Image (cartoon, rainbow, N blue to C red; front, side, top):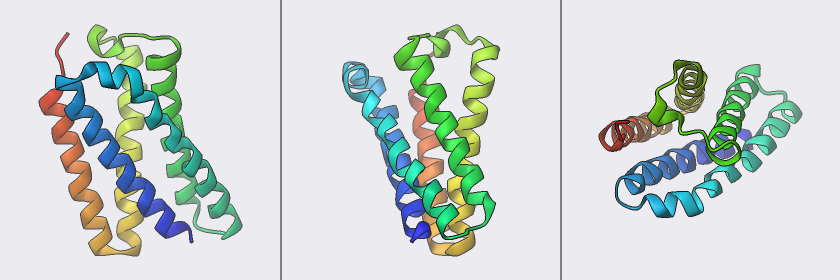
Length: 142
């Protein structure tokens, strides 16, 4: 049961981030109002960790899910709790952990799906590349 949930979480995560990146370019007001909904993906991620433990899945699932939860936590802390404009300030002390967790969690969704299903892994890879492209194209310079 974990593999389909992990796959679905990865797809939803990628589609949500693609949408956020595209919307931030033209409708930043929507992101500022509703962007916190993205953080709700912590709920199925937490459930997936419980499933991984119950099903005695390889520890890689738990590790990547914890990295993803850490990414969501840093996102919540920077953007919604402390409201730090870290993307504009380009302070490496804030950016390095954020970007490392962002890339690590994206990588985790690709490799863990790929090991179970090459077609699923390819789809996840395409979505992740699309997400990175949308991020790069719409990234505002401070």
